[in-house]
Image (cartoon, rainbow, N blue to C red; front, side, top):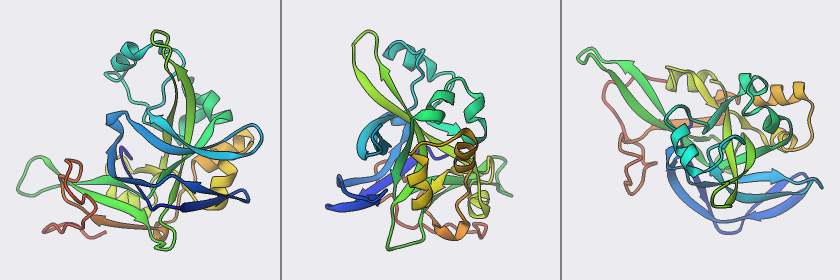
Amino acid sequence: MCYYNSLKLPAKKTVELKGKTKDLPPANIPVQSGFSYSSWPIIVEDNTGDWHAELAHWEFIPWFIKHLGELEESRKKYTTLNATAEKLFDSKIYQAAAKSRRCLVLSTGFYEWQHYQSKDDKKPVAYPYFISSANSNEPLLYMAGIWQPWTDKLSGEMIHSFAIITTAANELMSSIHNTKKRMPTILPKALAEEWIGPLNEPRIKALANYQLPSDALNAYTVAKNFNRGIEDPQMPFTYDLLPTL
């Protein structure tokens, strides 16, 4: 459920949001697992209405986690890599961030698994897909996110952490992520600009649940070991007897 992301930005990549054009730092991340608990580029807006890109920790760290040891223990019970759009304001963990600390998670594509029952195998068979923008002139996707400042009470380290918002899958993603039928909330530019600004609760809920149309995305199968350090994880890979999307 959007646990594998990709970001490939050329040098001097500029982005215009809210009437301001800024350079984004170049990036070449063919695939990164959220379970590596590493940094990822996000866009946030400050109190003056200005926005900037920064690296943040991919894993929303709740305020009640006191130090890294507690964080590692919490991972055995639940994950906060993603936040469910429909439950944002029901969650004590995400509610405050949904109201006032929203961000854009930058992406040029993500990976998701399709499952189906093989006739010759009792276990379900899974095939990975790479999903990206259908607009070759603008490959950058803006995923809705929420962020949280956190300080390790033992080490004193201060970081920003975040989670990606997920919503109900559109027709394309329902056929790919055909078990849970979810997808990241991907916002067109105008809605992305709105997401990081001041909003009331009904509008936040509406944007969090936004469902990008299927024709805005492109998808194809990739190798099953795409996340194992292969040279090009986004290389198309064809499987025999794979159901047609």
